[in-house]
Length: 291
Image (cartoon, rainbow, N blue to C red):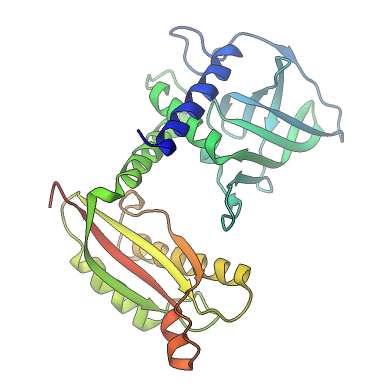
């Protein structure tokens, strides 16, 4: 077992232990049942930041318990910003959607009181806590008809994320069978007609079996600021992924997370050389054992 896997298991065990210690789950009771704690009523207009663990969630509301066993009802709005903190020199914090807010996730909420609830302005959590919570929730998620529609959707999403992570972790078991280089104009993340045609060809030749993955890597030339190039390369990758998903109905579960690598290190300074660096490499990978 390598250190990376050991760390993941450690994080999972620690997070799950915290959830159990807080009394989130009762035997055969489902995620919507938990031992009662103190109730926090927030004054209208009061600014507050709370760190705790999600006990349950239903639609735009979730119940957050802090270390003092005080429970706070948190309300989500269209303006709520949800971010996962990603550690690493070139890894930016990433915006997330509400599907990641599953029971068991340890997070910090900043917001303002309204009607006794905390209306969330910003929600932040670590990448390690997100992985641990999703894994735990996927393994214990409610499947009965009694579970709320939100809980059922969260359970399905969590299971898909866990399956995707397992597949990506096993990427070394895949071999490269085809690569398409999609060109982009300088300082642009808009797909050209030429780029779309190349993706159309790749999609038509994608293996019909369920044993393939599509890997998307974006690049830029080295001109300009490194931070801007990193953002631009990621935007290009996301544009390719969206085109394949929307135009060709390729399921997201068959694509790895789109990556942006910023400026290439080829050192090409000629106009033609820099033009070649503004690209996205799209690869089809097939499982070695199934190919």
